[in-house]
Picture (cartoon, rainbow, N blue to C red):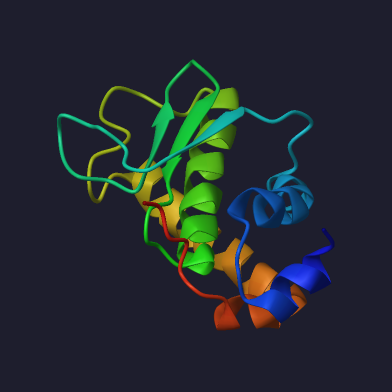
Length: 134
């Protein structure tokens, strides 16, 4: 299925949408390789509820998709991909994920910039329905 078919049907296939935007995210972050990305209903984290998680040193990202809008899912992916880039640059430490830390703030900032590029290239993504997981 082509991305235009997805947009016309308003039935998001989040895996195909992610495959479509991964080159844009990778290019923006200047990445040569990708981490493993796992889409889950809910990210299980003992510290606090979260929509995404990057495992430091593991090149592994989890992104929650259940009942979320595709644009929100993509923002989470861009945020976690920024953590992956920070890990490659050896900028992550044990407190990097803390609210307000420099690395966490940078991930929010960079994800926002990436989302502007995605929104500009794919303005119809905002018209998609939430990803429903039963």
